[in-house]
Image (cartoon, rainbow, N blue to C red; front, side, top):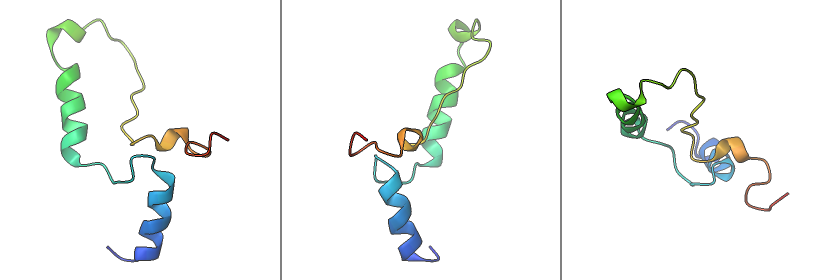
Amino acid sequence: MANLGNYADLMKLIPYKRIGATEEIGRTAVRLAPDFTDYIVAAMIYIDGGITLYPGFETGA
């Protein structure tokens, strides 16, 4: 980890307050892999701990 100041600033932006793990991406892919999801043509799935909700997630702004 290069700069703890930058890390602390990043954590302010992620509502889950942690960086996601590679396994979490894999679990999402595995969940979408079975045959019963074959009718899904396109979807946008954000695996980001809620950062797409920022700014204003915590304050409601």
